[in-house]
Length: 233
Image (cartoon, rainbow, N blue to C red; front, side):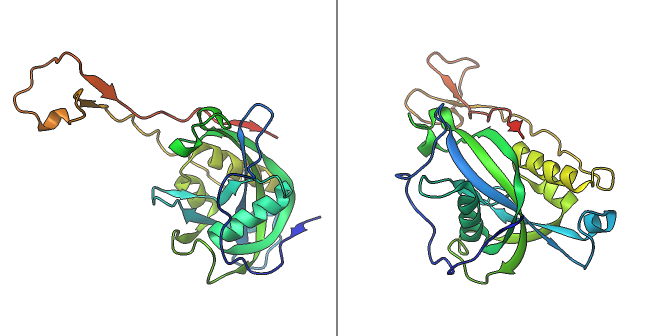
């Protein structure tokens, strides 16, 4: 049976990590949804349903791509309630969760605030659901921080910022029996950026005149790459 979203409209998103839930091995638990609606009256798990399905995506807070709503699962709520809460806080939509959930998806967060003893090296596990949207709010807690976009399934798949989110969407497509009707194309891998050399005093080497080819005491600064996501059904 679907799990219904209801209750009073939220006025603010939850803040802080005091109630954050973690796995036994220290990974941060997050919960979220792939919000779904249909552009016409169709039988949802048929080929015509695949053509009319629309998926809601939101921009990340820093504006670097499109994601599905998700966030911290807290100790005073069930995983279903956490997924519903995060979806209405971030995306401003409510509806029914399709059960069972799509699966759990392990990933690594690059945010420095998560590099701590409780979430070792940013390890996270996302518990993801599909949500059949029945209400789209005009005002919601993070409306000033994010933009919403309704996409076809193929568009959502190509727009998703993270591989693990594409895996979650593909899990829903497979559940609907649409794997042969939809053409889901993985985006090309992003090239690894060349590290920018930095002088030992913190100045950019590009700003220094007539540098020799090699300098003693120069270090290269790069970004930590996220680990390959692992899916558990």
